[in-house]
Image (cartoon, rainbow, N blue to C red; front, side, top):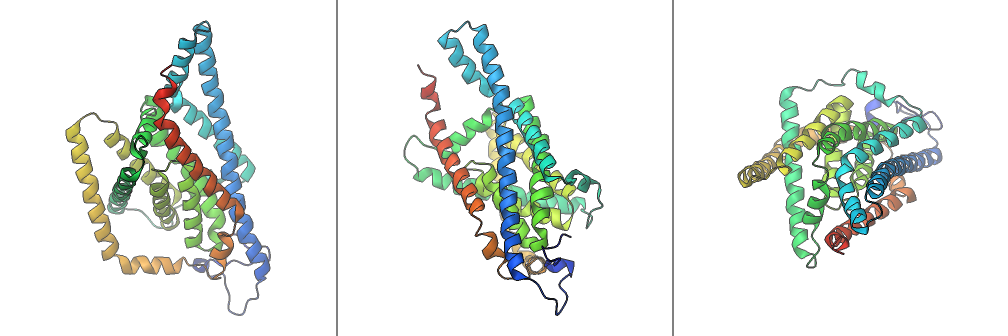
Length: 345
């Protein structure tokens, strides 16, 4: 467990707060803001490197296609449109390059956390319960987004825009990215790095902040709420069980989503929709049934110092990150709604 600038640690679960101990709360306030800011800035840097690497791969593809088309405008337009088919490759290259630079800058061996023994063994029964919960969260998010979609102006659809964007990933490399590579690197970054960096201020605080950054990191209006709540659950899993357990749950969750989404059978879609709705009902029932032990877990992870959240959420970097990524998500919806017209000339 890390300590503050004056050597103190306030995570209730660590038991490090000795009665009568004197803490420099000014240093504590500063450390909270600095660590939240650093987590945000490192994720921003990761996104920049990710985007640069992905853009280079896509630019090379377009240049080769344009060269083979001998400068024909129609060939160039087709090459730009077809470049969406390599989004799986660009995503893989981008997240690997971004993650490598991220871990080098952090100067910590987060990958070795995978070799550490679990704080508590995860049984198959627990894994099934958690999978049901993730699908219930997915169903609740879909229902909310569908209701919001109905209120948007004609021609703009969150569901359709997201569907067009995600369809470009349904290639072998795209599925590999969604199901395996993406979850592994995202867990190493958000639960292995960000959450562990913030745990010294309290488990609940670390889970909430890392989940918030994780949600807005996806920059898609349909995904932000789901990924935030999923991040809360994955953070809880990483703290209570292990980072490995969080990776497994993330992989299974994404895999199920791909199976349901990448199908042309109406029957399978209907069955999948009913199954998701059933998961939502079961999830609500589980939350009600296990509310007391769940509340006990929340109390155990509470921050000792009440100003922790005030200082954490006073980070300008955090709010700037939220605003910019949310704005990008809105812009994507508008841009994707007009995408067909871009290639109609």
